[in-house]
Length: 289
Ligand SMILES: Cc1cc2nc3c(=O)[nH]c(=O)nc-3n(C[C@H](O)[C@H](O)[C@H](O)COP(=O)(O)OP(=O)(O)OC[C@H]3O[C@@H](n4cnc5c(N)ncnc54)[C@H](O)[C@@H]3O)c2cc1C
Image 1: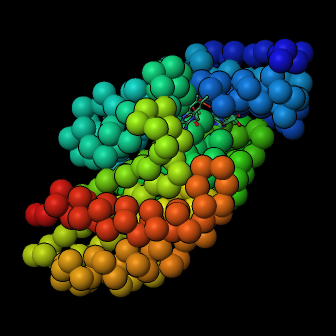
Image 2: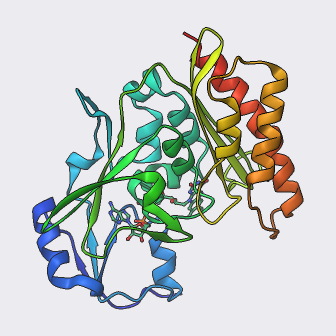
């Protein structure tokens, strides 16, 4: 497998990158860490004339809290950067923990949060958890910028709402009441495994009542999928083991798994039932105020 010919650009600023993408349009693709894109270039699945690297945009490697906006994660933050972020460790430990389970050390040091989202793999680990945390993404282009809820942004396997002249710059997790969250991934190996199934849960608990809950299932639909019936069953209810079992059954009924080499649809459905119950309990234990 050889790299095809293309012109490589590494603009110094975001503004320069936007000008370039505006000029090049459909002929260019954006390069984050390259962990997904390089093999697509090598095996001929992508044949751009131009590749625009974001590597000089070091301000997109930061994670910070902004008053009135929430936690802002730069698109070029690596999974390792998420793992070592003090802000995330304090507020949403689930994100560092999920990042630490991604791929191998090379992927965790080379891949980026923006790439994990824009690649839009149904198996990706960060989107389910970020959707459970109600995150949005900021995308910029020469003519302006827009904020899109992540839940709407990913619209099919390998498909997002981003246009060829746009760059995802930030992921924003809004400030919200004390929230417990977790992501449980089931893979076929202990390390370096892709998700056969992943379940993310975020809850707000007050006086043993679930004031709010979001459940997002990964690898069981073309996009990360909210278990909306299960959420409706839980919202506003007093927490009991029976209720959590019912919600887990509901999530299993809602998901749309397929059979492939790594697991049958029935197996995945059962995993959703088991992992949803576990994830709810874990997030609730963390989210009690
Ligand atoms: C061996 C291996 C194991 C892996 N294991 C896991 C795993 O366990 N869990 C998991 O979730 N993923 C896994 N991955 C997938 C991958 O590493 C991640 O999806 C990674 O986060 C992608 O980020 P990147 O910056 O390298 O993306 P790139 O390869 O640079 O780009 C991916 C796509 O996103 C676009 N893009 C990237 N950044 C931007 C941006 N800022 N704005 C606009 N478009 C952009 C690119 O044009 C391209 O279409 C694995 C990959 C490999 C090779």
